Image (cartoon, rainbow over all chains, first blue to last red; front, side, top):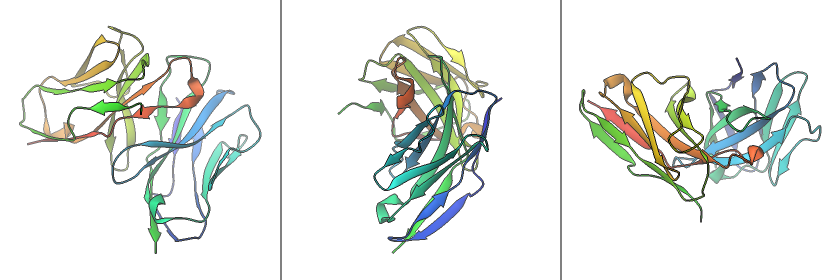
Length: 116
Length: 114
């Protein structure tokens, strides 16, 4: 069965600095999707960034980028120029591709604090 | 603005009560999901549905049931609420044909069973 691990329950970063959140996953599939979701105190879960496993290029969305290491099954999230609004729970997630009916598997989450 | 709406933000129920959590989406999505969120455990899938009147068990279906009579509405039912069902419940939906897009989530219902 696929699993997603986030080894950092809590992280903190100074405002304007860079922080990296770690994620590893386990799968025997070769084609899949990886996601990072953000859940602020408002509780509305928001998709931050996604990566398709067949693409070698790391995804980037403004200040958010990933380091996708397929062989190592690692998918870390880098937040540059951290802002107060980045404080949230961050969930790494995995989904197998090629089926319309499959579920997303989430990691346990990392709580990120941003220090002014 | 497209959205997933969960009818209650906070809910307090008594042990043994039958509890209904409602979720409605306006995006014409085929797939809908109910997750439970607990600290340190992340999100765990309870049930999902990929069409009207269709349902599939997730990882932790015990003590729960679901209903999907209309495409836009997916209800989670706690047949006899227990204190270990105190949790945050998140509803999500997804366009079946757009795998890469991930989910759209509701704002969650924090259920307390006393």
